Amino acid sequence: MKWGSILGTSFLVLCMAMYQLSKLNQNQKKERAVLIIFSVLGWLVANLLIFFPDAPGPTELIDVLYKPLGKLLE
Image (spheres, rainbow, N blue to C red):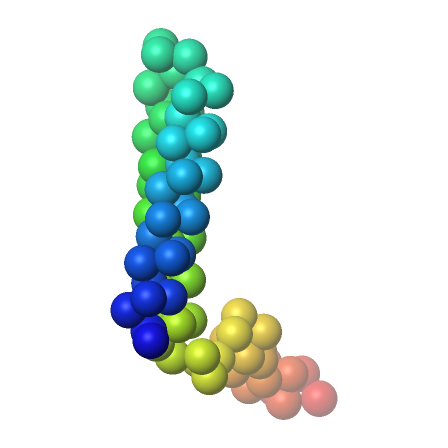
């Protein structure tokens, strides 16, 4: 079942990227590169969340980083 979700996610990301790439001019190379990089990163995060749905979020990372600082300032 997870492979079906990955294929569906891949199809959606590919469709979105192709649609956005068609809207950009051919001479906008940096914008195209950024779009492709962000699309791949988004696809990677989506697939990681499919396999590890209980992965900690960014707020938990902030708590881990700043909790010792908060105790130090008290």
